[in-house]
Every structure is written in C-alpha cells, then in structure tokens.
Length: 553
Image 1 (cartoon, rainbow, N blue to C red):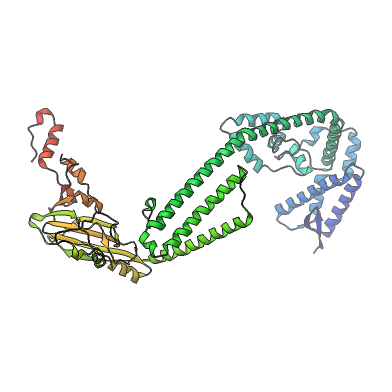
Image 2: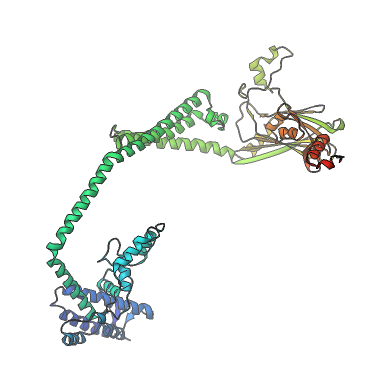
C-alpha cells in the first residue's frame, strides 16, 4: 500500500505516488536551476513541463491505469534526459549541435503557425516531408484549375490537420528530439532567428510596410470606386425590383380583398369554399388574411426606401403597432381556420340502389338534365306559380340562384351480372363527428330520371339553403347487362370519363359536329362500338394490292 498525492502540471491534474513525486520534484528543480540564466527560463521550463504532462497522459492511457508510479517517472526522465547528461553533452560539443542529431525522431504532421500564408497547411506538409514549402504551395495553386479540387482539399486538410501550438508540437513537426537538448537547441534557434530579424528590421520591414500600404490603398480605392459606381447602381436596381414586386403584390391583394368583401368571391381563388366561409365570419377571415399579407410587404417597402434610397423613416411606435396588429391578425386567422377544420374531422357515407326499367333491345341514351331544380324557397322568390305553364327554366348559369349545389359527382358504368339494370348512388360527406357527417350525407339531394330509354343525370346535387359545404360527394355506378348499347351525349363528360370525340374519330364520323357516340357493354367493360364497314375500309388500306379480295366478317 503506497501513499498517493495529487499534483497539477500546467493545468493537468495527476494522481502520483509519493516516492514518484519526490523523484519528479528533484528532476524539475534541477531543470529550473539549469535554465534559470537563460533569456526566457520560464518559457522553456513551461514547455518541458507540458511535454512531461503529455508523456504521463500517454502512459496512463496506454496502460489503463490512474496513478503514476516511480517507474513511470524514471522512464520519462530517461526519454527527456537528465541535466547531468545534458551538461556533459554541452561540454563535449562546445560549439553547436549537428542538425542531423536532432532529426532522428519521426516527424508528425501539424499546421505550421510560424510559416503560413493562409492556414499553414502547405508549410506543415513541407516540414513533414522535409522539402521546401513553395513546391507544396505551387501544387495546390495548380490544382485549383481542376474544378477547384485544390481548394476543397486545402479546406479539408485545414480542418483535419491540428495546429502546432506548443513548442513540443513544433519540434515534433520538424523531427527534433523532445528532450532537454532538443528544447534547449530549439529555443536558441528561435532566439537567434529573432535577433536576426531584429537586426534587419529597418532594412526588411520598411519596404514591406510600403508595399502593404500601397496594396491596401489600391485595393480599397478600387473597391470604393466600384461600390460608389456600379455597386450602387446594382443595389438600387435590386431595390427597384423588390419595390415593384411588393407593390404588385399589394395591388393584387387589395383588388382581391375588395372583390371578396363586395361580391363574396374572387376569380383567381375560385376553388375556395366561399359559402362555407360565409357561415364562419368571412369578413374577419378576409380582413385578417389581408393584414397578414400586406403588413410584411409594406415593411419591406419601407426598409428598401430607408436602406437603399435613404428616404422615409418609421418610428419605433409605428413599427411596434404594426407588429402587434400583424401578430393579432395571425391569431384571429388561425383561430377561425381551426374552427372550420374542426367540422371536417369525421366522414360518413351511405348508398342506395335504384332499379331501372329494362328497355327494348337494351338500348340506353345517357344525357345531362338541362332543367333547373328549384327548392320551395326558390319557387317563392321567383314567383314560379305566376309563370306561364309552358315556360321552362334551363340550368345555364351556375350562380343565378342562391341554392346550395356542388359538382363533385362521378359516374361509372359497369357490367351487371344480371339482366336487371340498376343505378347505385353513394353519398359521402364530412362533419365534426360521425353523426354530423352522416346527417350531412343524408341531406344530399341528387336528381336522376328515366324517360323510357333516356337516362337523365344532373351534373350537380343540392342541399338545404342553410347547409354548409362539408366535402360532399356523389358516386354513381350504372350497371348494365352484357351487350347493352349505350349512346352517350358528349356533355356527359362533365361527370364521367367518356371520350365521345375519339370514338367518333375511330368510326370516321365528323367528331366535331356530332354530339354523341355509341358504346357497347362487353366482358371487358364499356367499349366504343366500331362500325364493321369502317373497319373493313381501314384494313384494306393497309393490305397489299393482291389481297384486297379479303373480306372482314
């Protein structure tokens, strides 16, 4: 059992046995006594202590232990060299040490902070390979012309390679031995280099100062001329462009805002559910959205005028008021939108089957209903009872009546497994909960009529006048027996995906003049009915001359 103490070597704490501490203490006392007469004894002894601390850390990490023992201290002293050995070496060599003596250690890669143009990467690589740094710099400069790879590589090396901060790092970078002799030699070389620079200071620094002054003066002069001329023009052009964009946006927003308040709808935003918004404080929604859009645009305009054109000024109270109004508008808008969204949380649907009357030869004509469906409120407001008996109101204008309607209708035609034609109507809607959604689906009114062979479909569905839009949808599935003949009017394309035009072109009919086309129900579904004579003519055009006697049956 040995007693341990805690020591601090230049900010690094170590646990060391008492015997080992005495050995280390005596060694450092001899080192400080030896270098006390040097020009800067404190700096060199501090570097030696830093090196000893690094070696202790390496030993503790390599041997996975926490306490420094006497054996560790003696091993470090042996690597650093004792003062007695150092003094004997000085007496033997007298004059100076050979450079090769200090370059027997393996070099380590560092960035050289003493010889650098940017980050010291090139000088560090040159020291590692013991070559002139100018060749490394030329190699990097030449590689810049190859898609900038040199620049990327330099930045990566700058990040990866550590900087030689301490004297030990600089000595390891040059391959000098990290012992007392090496530290002494390195320090003397630095002092000699400093004295040489000081002796030539008047001769060397004066031209450099002049060159640096002239270069800096020319650079900033041309830079100032650029910003004073072309730079100002470019900035002002950018400012004018920003102003035009903001002004255009504000004008567009004002026009839309006025249209929404006056007419309740705005053409560019035709997809908005205006009737839904009308029941949720539409005016508040429009005003808050207007302020959310316009206030930032006005702020940008004022900043551009002040920053680029140096005109106009916004007081702090005005800016604070605008910010408060903008944040309040965002709060109002978000609150109202959340209220609307909450009414679409659930969905519900139901379906009903309508048995159709079979027709002679299974021929059916599909058309859109061109008559307007009126509610009791519409009939009263339009005085329908006072009209002549033969007058019909056609469904031509989408917005002529204030009746709730939608066009979210889809018609599919499929093959029926039985001879009975049927129409399956599916109604979908959303609501705040399932019950609300189901009631909304039940409120959908869709008009369909069969007049002998003619099947008339409305292109819209209806609801109560005070009903809101809840993403209602009507899906119609018409199931017809096999080999049924279906004549489809081209207006049916509004609710179904039937290409009447292409079918007529396939039959060589005047596709632009005809308004309907004939389809047949096959095993593969509804297909365009192609005339046999037309097919025969098409085939003959593509057969050789000696094969025109062939007939298509």
